[in-house]
Length: 359
Ligand code: HEM
Ligand SMILES: *[C@@H]1O[C@H](CO)[C@@H](O)[C@H](O)[C@H]1NC(C)=O
Ligand SMILES: *[C@@H]1O[C@H](CO)[C@@H](O)[C@H](O)[C@H]1NC(C)=O
Ligand SMILES: *[C@@H]1O[C@H](CO)[C@@H](O)[C@H](O)[C@H]1NC(C)=O
Ligand SMILES: *[C@@H]1O[C@H](CO)[C@@H](O)[C@H](O)[C@H]1NC(C)=O
Ligand SMILES: *[C@@H]1O[C@H](CO)[C@@H](O)[C@H](O)[C@H]1NC(C)=O
Ligand SMILES: *[C@@H]1O[C@H](CO)[C@@H](O)[C@H](O)[C@H]1NC(C)=O
Image 1 (cartoon, rainbow, N blue to C red):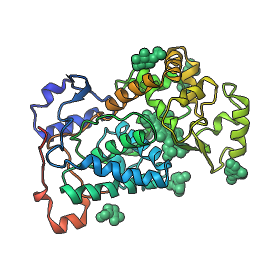
Image 2: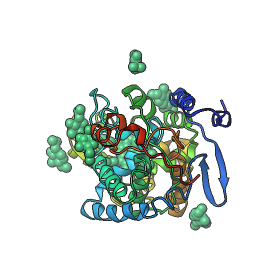
Image 3: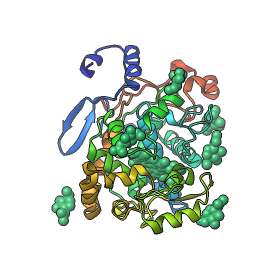
């Protein structure tokens, strides 16, 4: 099925087409644009340039304050964008109450331990942006920009984010969520084939895993490597982890990158070369011949890592996005507008502003 055929159809038909590819693979209609990485139809580098020129400065200024108090929130925001994009595309569905990977799950498993504060930060940014510009910026775009600022304000590369995503109307169910997020126990074979369904190659997989250069994990995500002990793990590293996680079900956390846990740098790859990767999905990237040299190249050259990370993040940030008149611009990132009783009583659905600026 070609996207080019799809664009001439009505938006309601598009919704059907989008839904039908959600579980199979996400596709791109890439157009080359000078030195910038490729972007999909409907997104633009200048989307809110006239409608909300202060958008990016509002977000950056606020996040600087947030991270000054607690740099750990940067990791939470980066992971939130990853979960949004991998499950149903970057449509803000992860933010919806009732989404399986979102804040208040209806079903218990999977508990994916996204930080509650990350959802609050996004809604707070949304409030600030909408106060300044009106309800024209999507929660999905705000999440993408917050992830970018999380990377940059932790010491990583700065980069442009193509904008114009719209917010989805459907929830991420448990099944769809589980099918799209690889487990930390995955080996490289599983990881490569899982991410290949989203058109990511081995370099993308290694670069994106570099997101684990910041943030923390709960014991339950890696204790399978301690009891019994994984022979691919450095002994001292394992012994230290056993102190933090004395049993399989200990409710403790530890950092993902022992060398520089709060700095976005290439030390994660140095960890892997020293068998100090936390998850099997991390460590096996160095064990597996297909990805080992990529890990090494990032460990010795941070510039190269940053370059590839930006390309892969830009690709990830455009997975099955909604654009144009698809979806909506949520007035509250936690609920669809049709479920928003406050909005319904004040304006009604008919009056929702559809902005096409940037086209
Ligand atoms: C490739 C497959 C991936 C797997 C298997 C994976 C798995 C995990 C797991 C299990 C955790 C810890 C959850 C917990 O126990 O609290 C985690 C944390 C994290 N992941 Fe990933 N992840 C993957 C890819 C990514 C990507 C692509 C990014 C972003 C580019 C990312 C960014 C993060 C961050 C920043 C944290 C720390 C979150 C925090 O401190 O709140 N991960 N990941
Ligand atoms: C999920 O994990 C978080 C953090 O560990 C915890 O606060 C929360 O109660 C858990 N939720 C469920 C439904 O188990
Ligand atoms: C979810 O997945 C399970 C097992 O993979 C399957 O039995 C079940 O029917 C699925 N549920 C839905 C609602 O698709
Ligand atoms: C990778 O994991 C899959 C699924 O658990 C398993 O079937 C496969 O044998 C593993 N491959 C390697 C090379 O360890
Ligand atoms: C959590 O880790 C600390 C050290 O990092 C350890 O002293 C404590 O016993 C652990 N908590 C539990 C419940 O095991
Ligand atoms: C590191 O990577 C950058 C970006 O690809 C490249 O320009 C540079 O030559 C590399 N440095 C070394 C020492 O190989
Ligand atoms: C957003 O919606 C949630 C869920 O209905 C509600 O708890 C919250 O108060 C709302 N936030 C705002 C700012 O209206």
